[in-house]
Length: 60
Image (cartoon, rainbow, N blue to C red):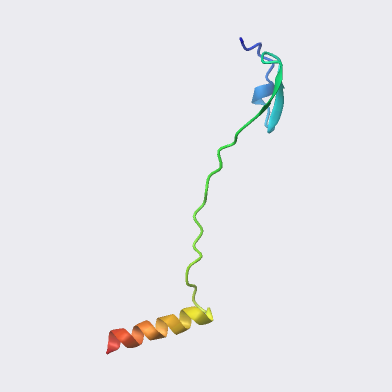
């Protein structure tokens, strides 16, 4: 199976037809996972209650 340089594999598409393989190919794109901070946020009621409890414990 030698590549015949049809340039289909270099197109920016998810699937393409490969003439050398005589078959459709589906590209497996590597997805980058971005870290999302979904922890406590200032102004959220539960955050404020939690923060106040911690401050009371530290001061005592």
